[in-house]
Amino acid sequence: MRVALGVTGGIAAYKSAELLRLLEERGLEVQVVMTAAAREFVSPLTFAALSGRKVITGLFGPSAGDANLESAIEHIAVAQSIDALVIAPATADVVAKIAHGLADDFLTTLVLATRVPIVVAPAMNVNMWENAATRDNLEVLRRRGIRIVEPEEGYLACGMTGAGRLASLESILDAVCGVLGMADDLNGETVLVTAGPTEEPIDPVRYLSNRSSGKMGYAIAEAGRRRGARVILVSGPTRLDPPAVTLLPVRTAEEMAAAVFENLKDASIVIMSAAVADFRPVRVESGKIKRNEGSRTLQLEPTEDILAGVSRRRAPGQLVVGFAAETDRLLENARAKLIAKQLDLVVANDVTAEGAGFDVDTNIVTFVFPDGRTIPLERMSKFDVAGRLLDEIAALRKNRVAVHSA
Ligand code: CTP
Image 1 (tube, rainbow, N blue to C red):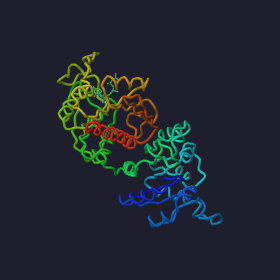
Image 2 (image 1 turned 45 degrees about the horizontal axis):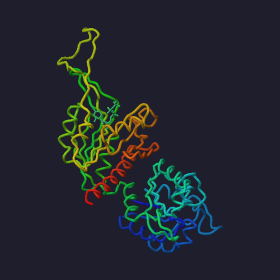
Image 3 (image 1 turned 90 degrees about the vertical axis):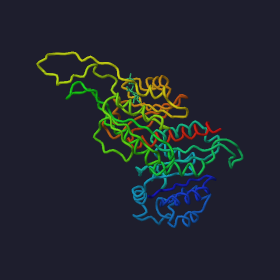
Image 4 (image 1 turned 180 degrees about the horizontal axis):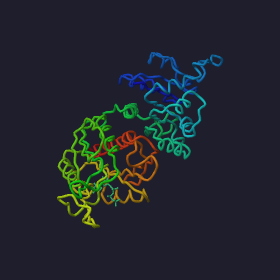
């Protein structure tokens, strides 16, 4: 796989040389792109020697007047040949340019021209980091699905102490591997995922169900597997090819509840993305209901709330994530579910929005956390939503393990 490493003008630019080496150690081919300011800090020669390939420094060839067609369209060629773009260090300036869609050099042009996942690792002075303009710009990047690797606190080159120091190279590397589906940050975890609809029989040929396709849950299961987790997928009826995980097919809410509760003790992470039927017919007719029997009323009773049951039975340290499929008052309803079921995270999903919800390949979701934090994401593929969700879960898991071992 091929990654473009964008280096911008900050003191931390020297650390990018080591990042380049770490990316290569992971078997990635790296194309370095430097801004003019970055070249004031580190010579392109360093990166050229380490990567064994030419460093791209400008839009139109190495110096003015060298422009030819090849160099003029190189940003498109690079954009199409890479699997991910990482910018480390990213200055406040480049973050602002990306937020506003500016494209006045090779790197920012590449950002606009590429469709691959982007990882941005900012590094700057603490005041610049805390400035409202920078915060807003980063929020825009996050919403667009760009993965931000937050800087650390510490001693800064300007002599001040605070947040703004480039994140550890290890966490930048994790984020790059994460967007490439190569991370193994869930190694050792067992993830129990529910997916799809349930079917509640009325008679031998009819049932009550809903429009869920199972795509979101299957994407989570596959993304979890790729990140090293053992995955148990409890799935209602779907038409999807199952991922290479432990698959427990079920039909009704009752069967789903039984499969979930049976496997709960093995799970360190539970993600309930299934659209479980909330009601089922009180009586299941043993023979097909005949039309000539005339009009009839179907009496329904509530099914068990599986997620609430999980929450009641959860073991210490177990992480529980729910989904909230809503048609109105999205965040309010999602927060209510988060509190009522004592969840660690709710994925709020407005199922009426175009490009979101049932039977489409994309989704528009907002992550809602117990501390009131929300992360709204723009429309993206369900696989990318799954990746972002697992990023958050891996981070929560890390904190929890740290708290428990402290
Ligand atoms: N859920 C569940 N068991 C049910 C119904 C829902 O485990 N019988 C889970 C879903 O998998 C999801 C979460 O609960 O993670 C929220 O589901 P949703 O249908 O949005 O909400 P409900 O709790 O059913 O509430 P309401 O129908 O009133 O919105």
